[in-house]
Length: 447
Length: 106
Image (tube, rainbow over all chains, first blue to last red; front, side):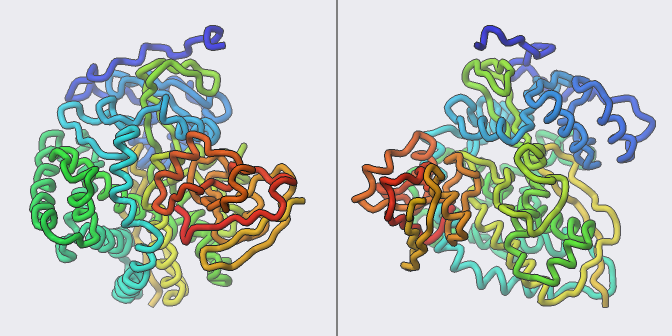
Protein backbone atom coordinates (compact mmCIF):
# COMPACT_ATOMS: atom_id res chain seq x y z
CA UNK A 1 0.00 0.00 0.00
CA UNK A 2 1.36 3.34 -1.03
CA UNK A 3 0.08 4.99 2.14
CA UNK A 4 2.35 2.84 4.29
CA UNK A 5 5.45 3.98 2.48
CA UNK A 6 7.71 6.46 4.11
CA UNK A 7 8.69 9.40 1.99
CA UNK A 8 12.45 9.00 1.97
CA UNK A 9 13.37 12.13 0.12
CA UNK A 10 15.30 14.30 2.51
CA UNK A 11 14.41 17.50 0.78
CA UNK A 12 11.68 18.30 -1.62
CA UNK A 13 12.40 17.78 -5.27
CA UNK A 14 12.50 21.31 -6.64
CA UNK A 15 10.01 22.21 -9.37
CA UNK A 16 11.25 22.61 -12.90
CA UNK A 17 12.53 26.05 -13.72
CA UNK A 18 13.68 26.64 -10.15
CA UNK A 19 17.30 26.14 -11.11
CA UNK A 20 18.80 29.41 -12.22
CA UNK A 21 21.79 30.02 -14.43
CA UNK A 22 24.66 30.30 -13.77
CA UNK A 23 24.35 27.28 -11.51
CA UNK A 24 25.40 27.67 -7.89
CA UNK A 25 28.76 26.13 -6.95
CA UNK A 26 28.81 22.35 -6.66
CA UNK A 27 29.21 20.77 -3.24
CA UNK A 28 32.05 18.27 -3.34
CA UNK A 29 33.61 16.09 -0.65
CA UNK A 30 36.69 17.52 0.95
CA UNK A 31 39.40 15.12 -0.19
CA UNK A 32 43.19 15.43 -0.20
CA UNK A 33 43.29 14.73 -3.94
CA UNK A 34 41.17 13.36 -6.79
CA UNK A 35 43.19 10.32 -7.77
CA UNK A 36 41.24 7.18 -8.50
CA UNK A 37 42.23 5.30 -5.34
CA UNK A 38 41.24 8.20 -3.07
CA UNK A 39 37.91 8.66 -4.80
CA UNK A 40 37.10 4.95 -4.71
CA UNK A 41 38.01 4.72 -1.04
CA UNK A 42 35.73 7.66 -0.35
CA UNK A 43 32.80 6.24 -2.34
CA UNK A 44 33.18 2.87 -0.60
CA UNK A 45 32.28 4.31 2.81
CA UNK A 46 30.75 7.78 2.31
CA UNK A 47 27.18 8.28 3.55
CA UNK A 48 25.02 7.55 0.49
CA UNK A 49 23.25 10.89 0.76
CA UNK A 50 26.51 12.81 0.70
CA UNK A 51 27.33 11.82 -2.89
CA UNK A 52 26.14 13.62 -6.01
CA UNK A 53 26.78 10.98 -8.66
CA UNK A 54 25.85 13.51 -11.38
CA UNK A 55 29.17 15.23 -10.67
CA UNK A 56 31.45 14.70 -13.71
CA UNK A 57 34.26 13.92 -11.28
CA UNK A 58 33.02 10.35 -10.81
CA UNK A 59 32.81 9.82 -14.56
CA UNK A 60 36.11 11.21 -15.74
CA UNK A 61 37.79 9.03 -13.12
CA UNK A 62 35.57 5.98 -13.80
CA UNK A 63 34.91 5.58 -10.07
CA UNK A 64 31.09 5.64 -10.17
CA UNK A 65 30.95 1.80 -10.13
CA UNK A 66 31.84 1.76 -6.44
CA UNK A 67 28.86 3.91 -5.51
CA UNK A 68 26.38 2.08 -7.75
CA UNK A 69 27.40 -1.27 -6.32
CA UNK A 70 26.47 0.06 -2.88
CA UNK A 71 23.18 1.53 -4.09
CA UNK A 72 22.18 -1.75 -5.76
CA UNK A 73 22.82 -3.55 -2.48
CA UNK A 74 21.70 -1.00 0.10
CA UNK A 75 19.31 1.47 -1.55
CA UNK A 76 18.47 0.45 -5.12
CA UNK A 77 16.00 3.28 -5.67
CA UNK A 78 17.54 6.27 -3.94
CA UNK A 79 16.90 10.01 -3.97
CA UNK A 80 19.88 12.34 -4.38
CA UNK A 81 19.31 15.77 -2.90
CA UNK A 82 22.86 16.99 -2.49
CA UNK A 83 23.36 19.78 -5.03
CA UNK A 84 19.64 19.90 -5.75
CA UNK A 85 19.98 23.63 -6.37
CA UNK A 86 21.85 22.52 -9.51
CA UNK A 87 19.79 19.56 -10.72
CA UNK A 88 16.53 19.77 -8.63
CA UNK A 89 17.15 16.36 -7.04
CA UNK A 90 16.65 13.00 -8.72
CA UNK A 91 15.88 9.35 -8.10
CA UNK A 92 18.65 6.90 -8.89
CA UNK A 93 17.33 3.62 -10.29
CA UNK A 94 20.19 1.16 -10.19
CA UNK A 95 18.94 -2.43 -10.48
CA UNK A 96 18.23 -4.20 -13.75
CA UNK A 97 14.63 -5.06 -12.92
CA UNK A 98 13.74 -1.58 -11.69
CA UNK A 99 15.30 0.04 -14.76
CA UNK A 100 13.31 -2.36 -16.92
CA UNK A 101 10.13 -1.42 -15.01
CA UNK A 102 10.67 2.29 -15.71
CA UNK A 103 11.77 1.86 -19.31
CA UNK A 104 8.71 -0.23 -20.17
CA UNK A 105 6.20 2.07 -18.48
CA UNK A 106 6.06 5.11 -20.71
CA UNK A 107 2.51 5.82 -19.52
CA UNK A 108 3.85 6.81 -16.07
CA UNK A 109 7.44 7.76 -16.84
CA UNK A 110 7.48 10.50 -19.46
CA UNK A 111 10.29 11.52 -21.80
CA UNK A 112 8.69 14.85 -22.70
CA UNK A 113 11.17 17.65 -23.48
CA UNK A 114 9.14 20.36 -21.74
CA UNK A 115 9.22 18.33 -18.52
CA UNK A 116 12.99 18.24 -18.78
CA UNK A 117 13.54 15.51 -21.35
CA UNK A 118 15.71 12.44 -21.16
CA UNK A 119 18.88 13.54 -19.42
CA UNK A 120 19.56 14.10 -15.74
CA UNK A 121 20.07 17.81 -16.28
CA UNK A 122 16.87 19.34 -17.64
CA UNK A 123 16.74 20.54 -21.17
CA UNK A 124 17.32 24.31 -21.09
CA UNK A 125 13.80 25.80 -20.75
CA UNK A 126 14.93 28.79 -22.82
CA UNK A 127 16.11 26.51 -25.61
CA UNK A 128 13.75 23.55 -25.83
CA UNK A 129 14.67 21.28 -28.70
CA UNK A 130 11.85 18.80 -29.27
CA UNK A 131 13.17 15.49 -30.62
CA UNK A 132 11.44 12.15 -30.83
CA UNK A 133 13.47 10.55 -28.05
CA UNK A 134 12.11 13.32 -25.81
CA UNK A 135 8.47 12.84 -26.81
CA UNK A 136 5.75 10.52 -25.62
CA UNK A 137 3.32 8.62 -27.87
CA UNK A 138 1.64 9.23 -30.20
CA UNK A 139 3.97 11.89 -31.65
CA UNK A 140 7.07 9.90 -30.74
CA UNK A 141 5.88 6.89 -32.68
CA UNK A 142 5.22 8.62 -35.98
CA UNK A 143 8.46 10.60 -35.93
CA UNK A 144 10.52 7.55 -35.00
CA UNK A 145 8.91 5.62 -37.81
CA UNK A 146 9.89 8.37 -40.24
CA UNK A 147 13.60 7.64 -39.74
CA UNK A 148 13.42 3.95 -38.88
CA UNK A 149 13.83 2.73 -42.49
CA UNK A 150 17.40 4.06 -42.68
CA UNK A 151 18.50 1.47 -40.12
CA UNK A 152 16.23 -1.33 -41.33
CA UNK A 153 17.80 -4.69 -42.05
CA UNK A 154 17.50 -4.19 -45.77
CA UNK A 155 19.20 -0.82 -45.71
CA UNK A 156 21.97 -2.09 -43.45
CA UNK A 157 22.73 -4.88 -45.88
CA UNK A 158 23.24 -2.22 -48.55
CA UNK A 159 25.70 -0.33 -46.27
CA UNK A 160 27.79 -3.34 -45.36
CA UNK A 161 30.28 -3.26 -48.21
CA UNK A 162 30.69 0.51 -47.90
CA UNK A 163 31.41 0.22 -44.16
CA UNK A 164 33.93 -2.57 -44.79
CA UNK A 165 35.69 -0.63 -47.52
CA UNK A 166 36.02 2.48 -45.36
CA UNK A 167 37.09 0.53 -42.32
CA UNK A 168 39.84 -1.13 -44.36
CA UNK A 169 40.94 2.26 -45.67
CA UNK A 170 41.11 3.82 -42.21
CA UNK A 171 42.99 0.84 -40.73
CA UNK A 172 45.42 0.65 -43.62
CA UNK A 173 46.25 4.31 -43.12
CA UNK A 174 47.32 3.89 -39.49
CA UNK A 175 50.98 4.38 -38.59
CA UNK A 176 53.13 1.44 -37.48
CA UNK A 177 55.56 1.57 -34.62
CA UNK A 178 54.51 4.99 -33.41
CA UNK A 179 52.04 6.28 -30.85
CA UNK A 180 48.75 7.73 -32.06
CA UNK A 181 45.32 8.60 -30.67
CA UNK A 182 42.87 5.81 -31.43
CA UNK A 183 39.89 8.07 -30.67
CA UNK A 184 40.84 10.58 -33.34
CA UNK A 185 42.27 8.26 -35.98
CA UNK A 186 39.76 5.42 -35.77
CA UNK A 187 36.74 5.98 -33.52
CA UNK A 188 35.86 9.49 -34.68
CA UNK A 189 36.99 8.85 -38.23
CA UNK A 190 34.74 5.84 -38.76
CA UNK A 191 31.67 7.21 -37.01
CA UNK A 192 31.87 10.61 -38.71
CA UNK A 193 32.12 9.00 -42.15
CA UNK A 194 29.08 6.86 -41.39
CA UNK A 195 27.16 9.81 -40.07
CA UNK A 196 27.93 11.90 -43.17
CA UNK A 197 26.55 9.06 -45.30
CA UNK A 198 23.39 8.78 -43.21
CA UNK A 199 22.72 12.50 -43.55
CA UNK A 200 23.86 12.86 -47.14
CA UNK A 201 26.33 15.39 -45.74
CA UNK A 202 29.55 16.25 -47.63
CA UNK A 203 32.26 13.80 -46.55
CA UNK A 204 35.00 16.42 -46.60
CA UNK A 205 33.13 18.32 -43.87
CA UNK A 206 32.33 15.27 -41.75
CA UNK A 207 34.21 16.51 -38.71
CA UNK A 208 31.63 19.30 -38.38
CA UNK A 209 29.16 16.58 -37.40
CA UNK A 210 31.52 15.38 -34.68
CA UNK A 211 31.92 18.96 -33.52
CA UNK A 212 28.18 19.57 -33.27
CA UNK A 213 27.71 16.26 -31.50
CA UNK A 214 30.33 17.21 -28.93
CA UNK A 215 28.84 20.67 -28.47
CA UNK A 216 25.35 19.23 -27.98
CA UNK A 217 26.44 17.11 -25.04
CA UNK A 218 29.25 19.28 -23.65
CA UNK A 219 28.80 20.66 -20.16
CA UNK A 220 28.63 24.47 -20.60
CA UNK A 221 30.11 24.89 -17.15
CA UNK A 222 33.40 23.16 -17.83
CA UNK A 223 36.36 25.33 -18.72
CA UNK A 224 37.13 25.18 -22.42
CA UNK A 225 33.55 24.34 -23.40
CA UNK A 226 31.33 27.01 -24.95
CA UNK A 227 29.01 28.64 -22.44
CA UNK A 228 25.25 28.37 -22.63
CA UNK A 229 24.65 31.21 -25.08
CA UNK A 230 27.61 30.38 -27.26
CA UNK A 231 26.37 26.79 -27.43
CA UNK A 232 22.96 27.97 -28.59
CA UNK A 233 24.61 30.04 -31.31
CA UNK A 234 26.64 27.09 -32.55
CA UNK A 235 23.60 24.84 -32.70
CA UNK A 236 21.62 27.50 -34.55
CA UNK A 237 24.48 27.60 -37.05
CA UNK A 238 24.09 23.85 -37.48
CA UNK A 239 20.37 24.34 -38.05
CA UNK A 240 21.09 26.93 -40.73
CA UNK A 241 23.41 24.59 -42.62
CA UNK A 242 20.99 21.69 -42.45
CA UNK A 243 18.10 23.93 -43.49
CA UNK A 244 19.92 24.54 -46.76
CA UNK A 245 20.14 20.79 -47.31
CA UNK A 246 16.48 20.44 -46.37
CA UNK A 247 15.47 23.10 -48.89
CA UNK A 248 17.42 21.33 -51.61
CA UNK A 249 15.84 17.99 -50.84
CA UNK A 250 12.26 18.81 -49.89
CA UNK A 251 11.22 19.41 -53.50
CA UNK A 252 13.53 16.82 -55.03
CA UNK A 253 13.00 13.07 -55.38
CA UNK A 254 13.70 11.21 -52.10
CA UNK A 255 17.40 10.43 -51.80
CA UNK A 256 17.22 7.94 -48.92
CA UNK A 257 19.26 10.02 -46.46
CA UNK A 258 17.94 11.26 -43.11
CA UNK A 259 17.38 14.85 -44.20
CA UNK A 260 15.44 13.72 -47.24
CA UNK A 261 13.46 11.22 -45.17
CA UNK A 262 12.45 13.89 -42.65
CA UNK A 263 11.58 16.33 -45.45
CA UNK A 264 9.35 13.83 -47.25
CA UNK A 265 7.52 12.16 -44.37
CA UNK A 266 4.13 13.64 -43.46
CA UNK A 267 4.95 13.22 -39.74
CA UNK A 268 8.05 15.41 -39.95
CA UNK A 269 7.61 17.51 -43.10
CA UNK A 270 6.16 20.48 -41.21
CA UNK A 271 8.40 20.45 -38.16
CA UNK A 272 9.14 23.86 -36.68
CA UNK A 273 12.85 24.79 -36.89
CA UNK A 274 13.61 23.96 -33.24
CA UNK A 275 12.13 20.52 -33.71
CA UNK A 276 14.18 19.93 -36.85
CA UNK A 277 17.22 20.98 -34.85
CA UNK A 278 16.24 18.71 -31.97
CA UNK A 279 15.91 15.69 -34.21
CA UNK A 280 19.23 16.52 -35.89
CA UNK A 281 20.93 16.65 -32.49
CA UNK A 282 19.34 13.36 -31.55
CA UNK A 283 20.45 11.59 -34.71
CA UNK A 284 23.92 13.11 -34.69
CA UNK A 285 24.60 12.31 -31.05
CA UNK A 286 22.92 8.92 -31.34
CA UNK A 287 24.98 7.95 -34.34
CA UNK A 288 28.23 9.45 -33.21
CA UNK A 289 29.04 9.50 -29.52
CA UNK A 290 27.80 6.04 -28.78
CA UNK A 291 29.52 3.91 -31.40
CA UNK A 292 32.62 6.07 -31.15
CA UNK A 293 33.00 5.23 -27.50
CA UNK A 294 32.31 1.53 -27.95
CA UNK A 295 35.02 1.46 -30.64
CA UNK A 296 37.47 2.93 -28.16
CA UNK A 297 36.22 0.94 -25.19
CA UNK A 298 36.58 -2.38 -26.98
CA UNK A 299 40.26 -1.89 -27.65
CA UNK A 300 40.87 -0.70 -24.11
CA UNK A 301 39.03 -3.68 -22.57
CA UNK A 302 40.96 -6.21 -24.68
CA UNK A 303 44.22 -4.66 -23.53
CA UNK A 304 43.12 -4.80 -19.90
CA UNK A 305 42.11 -8.44 -20.38
CA UNK A 306 44.91 -10.11 -22.34
CA UNK A 307 43.39 -13.56 -21.94
CA UNK A 308 40.28 -12.32 -23.72
CA UNK A 309 42.40 -10.75 -26.48
CA UNK A 310 44.17 -14.11 -26.91
CA UNK A 311 40.80 -15.89 -27.01
CA UNK A 312 39.63 -13.54 -29.76
CA UNK A 313 42.76 -14.04 -31.87
CA UNK A 314 42.43 -17.79 -31.51
CA UNK A 315 38.79 -17.66 -32.52
CA UNK A 316 37.73 -14.67 -34.67
CA UNK A 317 34.26 -16.23 -34.79
CA UNK A 318 33.73 -14.68 -31.36
CA UNK A 319 33.58 -11.15 -32.80
CA UNK A 320 29.82 -10.95 -32.97
CA UNK A 321 29.35 -12.04 -29.37
CA UNK A 322 32.19 -9.80 -28.25
CA UNK A 323 30.51 -6.77 -29.83
CA UNK A 324 27.54 -7.17 -27.48
CA UNK A 325 29.87 -7.63 -24.53
CA UNK A 326 31.80 -4.47 -25.48
CA UNK A 327 28.57 -2.50 -25.66
CA UNK A 328 27.43 -3.80 -22.27
CA UNK A 329 30.78 -3.21 -20.65
CA UNK A 330 31.09 0.29 -22.10
CA UNK A 331 27.43 1.36 -21.80
CA UNK A 332 28.16 4.48 -23.87
CA UNK A 333 25.16 6.33 -22.52
CA UNK A 334 25.27 6.01 -18.75
CA UNK A 335 21.64 6.87 -18.18
CA UNK A 336 18.29 7.92 -19.52
CA UNK A 337 15.97 10.03 -17.45
CA UNK A 338 12.17 10.17 -17.15
CA UNK A 339 9.68 12.39 -15.32
CA UNK A 340 6.91 10.78 -13.26
CA UNK A 341 3.48 11.83 -14.54
CA UNK A 342 1.77 10.62 -11.36
CA UNK A 343 2.61 9.39 -7.88
CA UNK A 344 3.87 5.84 -8.15
CA UNK A 345 5.85 3.22 -6.27
CA UNK A 346 9.14 1.91 -7.54
CA UNK A 347 11.40 -0.53 -5.70
CA UNK A 348 9.42 0.17 -2.52
CA UNK A 349 9.93 3.93 -2.78
CA UNK A 350 7.25 6.52 -3.20
CA UNK A 351 7.90 8.56 -6.32
CA UNK A 352 5.98 11.82 -6.53
CA UNK A 353 4.41 13.27 -9.63
CA UNK A 354 6.98 15.54 -11.29
CA UNK A 355 9.99 13.73 -9.82
CA UNK A 356 13.00 13.13 -11.97
CA UNK A 357 13.79 9.43 -12.33
CA UNK A 358 17.23 8.47 -13.62
CA UNK A 359 17.69 4.95 -15.02
CA UNK A 360 21.36 4.14 -14.64
CA UNK A 361 22.05 1.74 -17.49
CA UNK A 362 25.69 1.70 -16.42
CA UNK A 363 24.60 0.26 -13.07
CA UNK A 364 21.94 -2.15 -14.40
CA UNK A 365 24.59 -3.59 -16.72
CA UNK A 366 26.60 -4.55 -13.64
CA UNK A 367 23.71 -6.03 -11.65
CA UNK A 368 24.82 -9.44 -10.40
CA UNK A 369 21.27 -10.48 -9.57
CA UNK A 370 20.68 -10.77 -13.33
CA UNK A 371 24.16 -11.16 -14.85
CA UNK A 372 26.87 -13.63 -13.86
CA UNK A 373 30.14 -12.01 -12.87
CA UNK A 374 29.11 -8.67 -14.43
CA UNK A 375 32.30 -6.80 -13.51
CA UNK A 376 34.29 -9.11 -15.79
CA UNK A 377 34.75 -8.53 -19.52
CA UNK A 378 34.09 -11.94 -21.10
CA UNK A 379 33.96 -11.97 -24.89
CA UNK A 380 32.24 -15.36 -25.07
CA UNK A 381 29.74 -14.53 -22.35
CA UNK A 382 26.57 -16.58 -22.81
CA UNK A 383 23.65 -14.48 -23.95
CA UNK A 384 25.77 -11.37 -24.24
CA UNK A 385 22.97 -9.72 -26.22
CA UNK A 386 20.96 -9.36 -23.03
CA UNK A 387 22.34 -6.04 -21.89
CA UNK A 388 20.79 -2.71 -21.00
CA UNK A 389 22.94 -0.37 -23.08
CA UNK A 390 20.35 0.21 -25.83
CA UNK A 391 17.54 0.71 -23.34
CA UNK A 392 14.24 -1.12 -23.57
CA UNK A 393 10.68 -0.22 -24.45
CA UNK A 394 9.53 2.24 -27.08
CA UNK A 395 12.63 4.45 -26.86
CA UNK A 396 15.07 1.56 -27.37
CA UNK A 397 17.99 2.64 -29.53
CA UNK A 398 16.84 2.81 -33.14
CA UNK A 399 20.36 2.40 -34.53
CA UNK A 400 21.41 -0.60 -32.48
CA UNK A 401 21.84 -2.92 -35.46
CA UNK A 402 23.92 -0.37 -37.33
CA UNK A 403 26.14 0.10 -34.27
CA UNK A 404 26.64 -3.66 -34.00
CA UNK A 405 27.42 -3.91 -37.70
CA UNK A 406 30.02 -1.14 -37.57
CA UNK A 407 31.75 -2.72 -34.57
CA UNK A 408 31.63 -6.22 -36.03
CA UNK A 409 33.20 -5.13 -39.31
CA UNK A 410 35.83 -3.10 -37.48
CA UNK A 411 36.97 -6.07 -35.40
CA UNK A 412 36.90 -8.47 -38.33
CA UNK A 413 39.12 -6.11 -40.29
CA UNK A 414 41.44 -5.46 -37.32
CA UNK A 415 41.98 -9.19 -36.86
CA UNK A 416 42.83 -9.58 -40.54
CA UNK A 417 45.56 -6.95 -40.27
CA UNK A 418 47.09 -6.55 -36.86
CA UNK A 419 48.43 -9.14 -34.50
CA UNK A 420 48.22 -6.65 -31.65
CA UNK A 421 47.28 -3.06 -30.92
CA UNK A 422 48.89 -1.92 -27.72
CA UNK A 423 47.27 0.63 -25.40
CA UNK A 424 50.05 2.85 -24.08
CA UNK A 425 48.40 4.66 -21.20
CA UNK A 426 45.11 5.08 -19.38
CA UNK A 427 42.51 6.84 -21.52
CA UNK A 428 41.32 10.38 -21.00
CA UNK A 429 37.62 10.08 -20.21
CA UNK A 430 34.69 12.39 -20.96
CA UNK A 431 33.65 14.27 -17.79
CA UNK A 432 29.93 13.51 -18.11
CA UNK A 433 27.32 11.46 -16.30
CA UNK A 434 25.52 11.05 -19.63
CA UNK A 435 28.03 10.38 -22.42
CA UNK A 436 30.29 7.70 -21.01
CA UNK A 437 33.28 7.82 -23.25
CA UNK A 438 36.81 8.78 -24.09
CA UNK A 439 38.51 11.91 -25.35
CA UNK A 440 41.82 10.20 -25.99
CA UNK A 441 43.41 6.74 -26.03
CA UNK A 442 47.06 6.54 -27.03
CA UNK A 443 48.00 3.29 -28.75
CA UNK A 444 50.74 1.76 -30.89
CA UNK A 445 50.65 -0.90 -33.56
CA UNK A 446 53.97 -2.78 -33.51
CA UNK A 447 56.02 -2.11 -36.66
CA UNK B 1 7.27 -31.25 -25.02
CA UNK B 2 5.59 -29.18 -27.69
CA UNK B 3 6.74 -29.34 -31.30
CA UNK B 4 7.24 -25.85 -32.79
CA UNK B 5 8.50 -25.23 -36.31
CA UNK B 6 10.41 -21.97 -36.67
CA UNK B 7 10.56 -20.88 -40.30
CA UNK B 8 13.24 -18.39 -41.29
CA UNK B 9 12.47 -15.68 -43.82
CA UNK B 10 14.34 -17.67 -46.49
CA UNK B 11 12.17 -20.71 -45.83
CA UNK B 12 14.65 -22.70 -43.70
CA UNK B 13 12.70 -24.75 -41.17
CA UNK B 14 13.79 -25.56 -37.63
CA UNK B 15 11.68 -28.14 -35.89
CA UNK B 16 12.32 -28.06 -32.16
CA UNK B 17 10.75 -29.34 -28.97
CA UNK B 18 9.83 -26.65 -26.48
CA UNK B 19 8.99 -27.48 -22.88
CA UNK B 20 5.35 -27.03 -21.95
CA UNK B 21 4.98 -23.57 -20.37
CA UNK B 22 8.20 -22.19 -21.85
CA UNK B 23 7.83 -19.13 -24.05
CA UNK B 24 8.61 -19.41 -27.76
CA UNK B 25 11.52 -16.94 -27.64
CA UNK B 26 13.26 -19.14 -25.07
CA UNK B 27 12.37 -22.18 -27.12
CA UNK B 28 14.19 -20.69 -30.10
CA UNK B 29 17.20 -19.31 -28.22
CA UNK B 30 17.80 -22.51 -26.24
CA UNK B 31 17.71 -24.53 -29.45
CA UNK B 32 19.98 -22.12 -31.33
CA UNK B 33 17.36 -21.18 -33.88
CA UNK B 34 18.94 -18.30 -35.83
CA UNK B 35 16.99 -15.07 -36.24
CA UNK B 36 15.40 -14.88 -32.81
CA UNK B 37 17.62 -12.98 -30.38
CA UNK B 38 15.47 -12.18 -27.35
CA UNK B 39 17.59 -9.22 -26.24
CA UNK B 40 15.29 -8.15 -23.40
CA UNK B 41 15.02 -11.62 -21.91
CA UNK B 42 11.28 -11.97 -22.42
CA UNK B 43 9.74 -8.68 -21.25
CA UNK B 44 8.17 -7.60 -24.56
CA UNK B 45 10.56 -4.67 -24.22
CA UNK B 46 12.41 -5.06 -27.53
CA UNK B 47 11.29 -6.61 -30.78
CA UNK B 48 14.06 -9.12 -31.41
CA UNK B 49 11.78 -12.15 -31.21
CA UNK B 50 9.28 -10.75 -33.68
CA UNK B 51 7.40 -13.46 -35.59
CA UNK B 52 4.27 -14.01 -37.68
CA UNK B 53 1.61 -16.47 -36.61
CA UNK B 54 -0.26 -18.34 -39.37
CA UNK B 55 -3.98 -17.57 -39.42
CA UNK B 56 -5.05 -21.04 -38.26
CA UNK B 57 -3.07 -20.65 -35.03
CA UNK B 58 -3.85 -17.04 -34.21
CA UNK B 59 -6.84 -17.73 -31.98
CA UNK B 60 -4.80 -20.20 -29.90
CA UNK B 61 -1.93 -17.80 -29.26
CA UNK B 62 -4.01 -15.01 -27.71
CA UNK B 63 -3.56 -11.31 -28.39
CA UNK B 64 -0.88 -8.67 -27.95
CA UNK B 65 -0.40 -6.87 -24.64
CA UNK B 66 -0.16 -3.05 -24.74
CA UNK B 67 3.63 -2.97 -24.57
CA UNK B 68 3.96 -5.80 -27.07
CA UNK B 69 1.67 -3.90 -29.41
CA UNK B 70 3.76 -0.71 -29.06
CA UNK B 71 7.00 -2.57 -29.75
CA UNK B 72 5.60 -4.37 -32.79
CA UNK B 73 4.06 -1.24 -34.25
CA UNK B 74 7.46 0.49 -34.20
CA UNK B 75 8.99 -2.27 -36.36
CA UNK B 76 9.16 -1.77 -40.12
CA UNK B 77 8.25 -5.38 -40.64
CA UNK B 78 5.03 -5.32 -38.58
CA UNK B 79 1.99 -7.15 -39.97
CA UNK B 80 -1.47 -7.79 -38.52
CA UNK B 81 -0.37 -11.28 -37.46
CA UNK B 82 2.87 -10.09 -35.82
CA UNK B 83 3.62 -11.26 -32.28
CA UNK B 84 6.59 -11.31 -29.97
CA UNK B 85 7.56 -14.94 -29.43
CA UNK B 86 8.41 -14.26 -25.78
CA UNK B 87 4.76 -13.52 -25.09
CA UNK B 88 3.49 -16.90 -26.32
CA UNK B 89 3.80 -19.91 -24.05
CA UNK B 90 4.17 -23.41 -25.45
CA UNK B 91 1.24 -25.69 -24.67
CA UNK B 92 -0.20 -28.92 -26.04
CA UNK B 93 -2.69 -26.87 -28.05
CA UNK B 94 0.18 -25.34 -30.04
CA UNK B 95 1.84 -28.66 -30.90
CA UNK B 96 2.91 -28.57 -34.54
CA UNK B 97 2.57 -24.79 -34.93
CA UNK B 98 4.68 -22.94 -37.48
CA UNK B 99 6.18 -19.61 -36.47
CA UNK B 100 7.46 -17.43 -39.30
CA UNK B 101 10.24 -14.88 -38.94
CA UNK B 102 10.79 -11.51 -40.61
CA UNK B 103 13.94 -10.96 -42.69
CA UNK B 104 15.54 -9.04 -39.83
CA UNK B 105 14.78 -8.29 -36.20
CA UNK B 106 15.17 -4.88 -34.64
